[in-house]
Amino acid sequence: MRKFTEKRLLVATHNKGKLAEIAALLAPFGIECVGAAEMNLPEPAETETSFVGNARIKAHAAAKATGLPALSDDSGIEVDCLGGAPGVYTADWAETPTGRDFTMAMTKTWEACDKIAAPEPRSARFRSTLVLAWPDGHDEVFEGKVEGHLVWPMRGALGHGYDPMFQPEGYDITFAEMDPAKKNEISHRADAFRKLVTCFEV
Image (cartoon, rainbow, N blue to C red):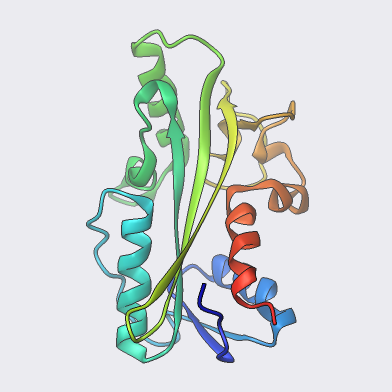
């Protein structure tokens, strides 16, 4: 694995929350994080059909455009009875003409399970794929996941996305009912980050 020896990292996201989360994680390593919005980077089209494919598109586009190493994340939820859908299209299922509506997306997901009379518990997992890319074209990939099942009706007002209908294995509450600090210890992104930081350790 290639070690990260630079002091500045471009985080290939326009999401301020995600940028802050990553910056806090990497602060102990003395790394300054800069976001794609600060660098006036456009969001590239995500044309791949896998998390790693789309994460690679974002990381390499950002690294090439700026000459800085870049980190990107692609994540989503996979529902087993739906053949892994929505998967890489998780955000697409929430798209409306006026922005993303995850309540609509969760309702659509549960109704799709009902339509095929899928037995409960309806197993699912969140996946996160991080790609760290260098301007010379090299990259390292780190994948994380958390297993669980869908619940209905939705529960909880914390979290975001599909959190209100996802109950992680070993817990009796959803991600949206869980203290954010606890969720961040066990989440798919935390799993991927634990692998990522091995790149930064001296």
